[in-house]
Image (tube, rainbow, N blue to C red; front, side, top):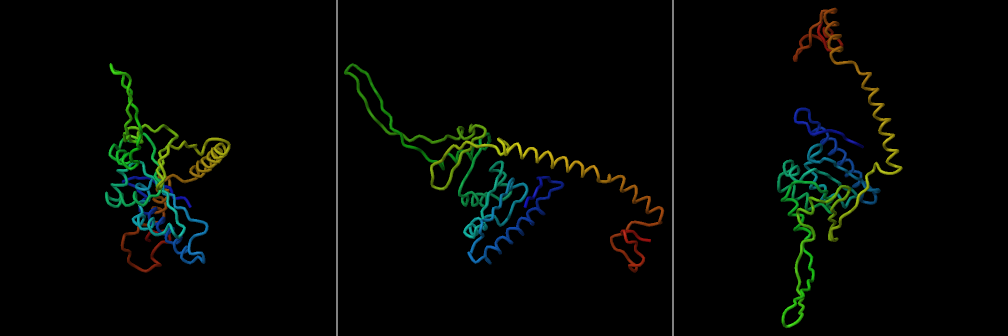
Length: 248
């Protein structure tokens, strides 16, 4: 099931999409509780792209904490950390971050504070240094240990394209190389299917009657039949009302 929308302050579909997503997740939870295995088999995946903008689920923290054991998995994505803070508040956003098992961070961001926290999260690595000195008394060597950051905040910002920093559980951080879904033979098939879908949508839109034409036709019908628009509160019996929402 796919829900598509955008973050538009004047015509936002986020409340409706959030309600539908909550209903779907509630249904999945009921199925998991009713299952003889005590969980969803196979697992149910809720992939929430652009979470703060399109489907800011108010129950996400509770679901991530309790429902993963029932076979409900969650993947959520946000463009910036500040989006999460604006949508959920600082405490709620940090709770979601703490419940996230795997972080996948892309480069190119401008949030210095968030990158600094990630750098602290990866901790330091202990390295050994050897110093060689050449003086009048001869050549001497000394060894010392030093703590060095795995990745500095600026290094995270400079993560190259098609790469991502992955911080998973207790494992050491890795810099993963990614492959786009549109690459290769399968990607060519996806592109061809995309072109077919776009052509189908274009043909469907061409068949839709223009809004101005529909308005003019409705006004013409009203003048011909001496109808007036239905007010907010309509009196009279149903027989006095036209079936198309106009009054005789």
